[in-house]
Image (cartoon, rainbow, N blue to C red; front, side, top):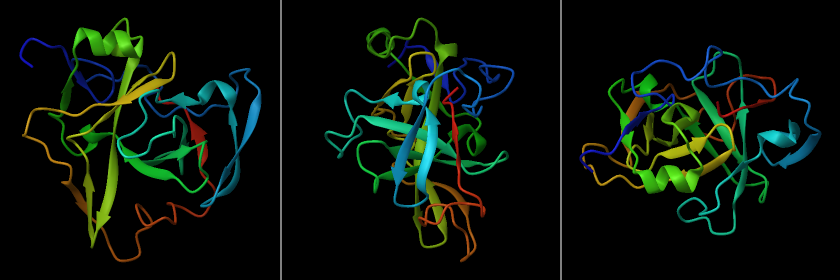
Length: 196
């Protein structure tokens, strides 16, 4: 994909945050009607309607699951929950891959930008799905999620670059870590977070 613009995880081409507030702002105060989201992990969670993220092409292996919201377990969280609004039992732990690999970026073609409604790269945010294998957290850096932070439309891309894997090591965790194990992080329920 030589010549395609490269998108880092914060929607920039130079490693600077896409906005002053960073990529994990909470949804309170946006003027949108709140909606109840049923989850099996956290019970009912309230989010603003304008924070629903649509994946029209769905995530790989999950047909029919197009609507998600991003839940933030705490203010300083490294990991978030991408909760399905179509299935209360479906949620993914996701993270900003540049927290672990500063050089990580996603090549994005003009037609992909058009499909996502992206006028500029700065309006995008990249996340990767996290898995826990034993005491190792891994990220799917081969299949990043690119989200238009303005229109709340996302797509899971599949990278041709074999530099990254679907189980790229992120960090070792202790046996009592909640990330990736279905128990969340922290004792309070997560708050909804914007993808920008």
